[in-house]
Image (cartoon, rainbow, N blue to C red):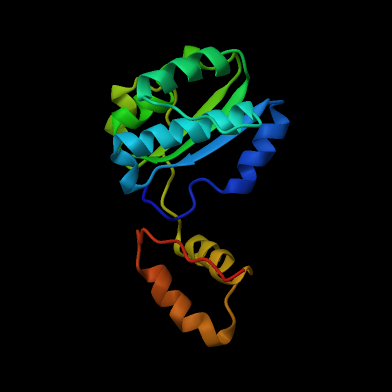
Length: 176
């Protein structure tokens, strides 16, 4: 589905983790810059750090080393791995190359705008998120921008215009 409109609300991930009795969770967001070898190496390190929870950060020297470490150190653990906004197969090959890399009962959730990436990787189950209706899009926008179901009157017109910009890749965030 289109980026930035809430296919994967993060609170649901934590509910899933506790409900399924998973041992670890890794949420990896792909960015355009994650195409480079060095960035994929950093994502492998992040995945291993999130899952293994070692005192010292893991430092990898190559993607093949990261693949071997994921297979050998994570292969016995029941984990939830979320790969968000994957846009090419080499990202999947480096981070979740095969089901046997992870323990029995593990779940790998992949969000992408390119269904072909999933077909090439032979993903077993696909779910296509449907585009939100105007009312739902307005509520999602309001929650992200204002932390409420509906904008105040002073922001109503601006909110309607923002929601009208369908498929906007940017998600509004309120200041913390």
